Image 1 (cartoon, rainbow, N blue to C red):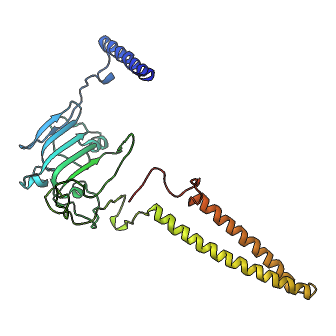
Image 2 (cartoon, rainbow, N blue to C red; image 1 turned 180 degrees about the vertical axis):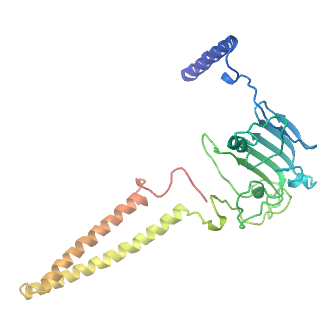
Image 3 (spheres, one colour; image 1 turned 90 degrees about the vertical axis):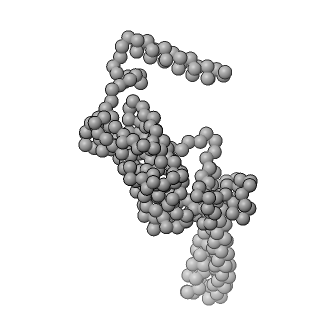
Length: 306
């Protein structure tokens, strides 16, 4: 064990010893995670359900798919092959807090995906997981109706990985499946529609495709090359006009308008040169034109998509 871990272990041991000492002397209920009496409503258990419940409004329900009353979901319709695991902390939380109401075991409650505090819901088959959670459903891609689903809901959700996090949508490459069909869905059906990932914060009608960084960089580089070519053409034209107007100014002994034209041409040449230089600097800064990555590169070092 390294010195750092030894220090942590010792500090935790010291804390544990202190806590046990304080508990033995007597402390208020609930302090240091001691037991505390907390009223909680009674869950309306279906015949097919097994419940593991804690002392503080936390539950694990194993049964058949339902998101509300006993007549809801695939289980409510009497369907089979719709096993469900519902992990819940804080049943009716927002309702209780909003109304400052205490619900004890005399109150019979059902699952409520709107007001329960936090939930992980796993189902073998749902009628429509999007409807269960009342979220907008995009009409594009595969339907969620009568499919297996996993859903998480809370005020804040975190998915944490120490090294690498992958969001993958599509068929896996298991051996043994028909090569043409590949992996099947939970109903045993062929997956025909292409994979689709949607990040929704509002109306699904406003969905737009994500830009692919490398392709955007390629396009912008080509556009910059076009602008650069046009700038060089204008620069060459201004150089030629400056030469002509300069010669005419000499021949006319500085008489207008050739002298003014000559001065204007020099200004245009300077502006075009500055524009071309700024274009190159922008490509270096944003589009990684050099071997070293630009300080304001449009491409992320840590997030990638296909």
